[in-house]
Length: 181
Image 1 (cartoon, one colour):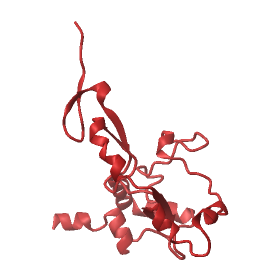
Image 2 (spheres, helix red, strand yellow; image 1 turned 45 degrees about the horizontal axis):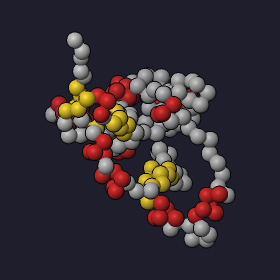
Image 3 (cartoon, one colour; image 1 turned 180 degrees about the vertical axis):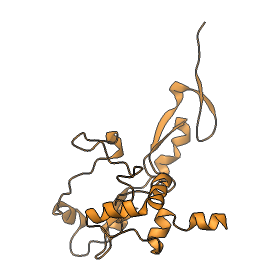
C-alpha cells in the first residue's frame, strides 16, 4: 500500500501534492523578524511577473545619526533621478565597494563561517544591529538595563535611555506599565 502526502497552499488553502507546490522565501517584510518559507501553487505566483518592479535597496545614515540606518527601497528609475551630475551607471561604477555582510541565505554564518550574533542573549541585547528588535531582546533590555548599558559603555556606545522616545518605543519601555493600569 502506498502513501500520498497532501499539502495546502499557504496563500489560498488549496490542496495539492507536495511536488506541485512552489517554495517561497519571504526574506524581508515589515511584520517579520526573520525570513519565513511559504508554499504556493505556481499559478498563484503568476501575478508576480506583472507586479514585480526593478528595485534598488539602500541604507542611509544621516550625519549625527546614532540610530540604525534608514532602509529605502525605490524603483530603479527613481533611484537614477538622484544622480544629477552624471548618469547613475557612472556614479555606481566609480563608487567605493563595501564588503558584503553575511546574508540570511548564508545560514546565519558570517563570511568566515562564524555564527552570526543573536541579540536574544544578555551578552548582545541592546547592541546596534540591523533589523527589528525582537520581543525577547526588548525584554532582556528592560529587565537588565544596567548590564546592557555597561556592555554598551564598554564599546563606547551611548546608553539606552527609557526616557528617550526612540529607545522607549524600540525596547517597549512603559508598555508593561500601561498594560497593568
